Amino acid sequence: MTGDEIFSRSDLVFSAEEVGAAYVRLAREITETLGEGNPLVLCVMKGAVVFAGQLLPLLRFPLDFDYVHATRYRNETVGGEIDWRVFPDTQMAGRQVLILDDILDEGHTLAAIRQRCLDAGATAFYSAVLLEKLLDKPKPVHADFIGLQVPDRYVFGCGMDVNGLWRNLPAIYALR
Image (cartoon, rainbow, N blue to C red; front, side, top):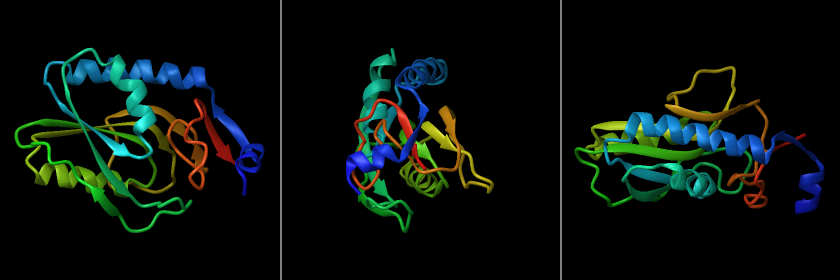
């Protein structure tokens, strides 16, 4: 399916303005919680790169930044086993860690990242997600900071893709 076909078979879920307002609110909430702690902020690649790029300039406190690359999707619409591509070598022992991820879907990737950070000595683990998918089943982890909630549909835009396409959209769309 081409990019134009994907887009024509999709519905707008959140406009760019609604997403922008979520960034501002999340920055305020994160600052209230972590603004005094010089946390290590980790971006989950590739999907959270847009989220991190929009959120980081709004955080008005010192922080260290790195990334982790773990995926279950590999350009598919259904997740599989976690593929650890990069885990940061930044010192986590004795640190507060904040993970930035694009979406909390079933929660398996975020739960695995959380465990690896705690095993590496993080004293506190926080997670911020642009989207939380509303599912009718329990998740192994919950996000501390949630931008927007979406229905149980395949969503894309703001860093999330469909078959590698449309990460660059400033709004959130869902396949029909």
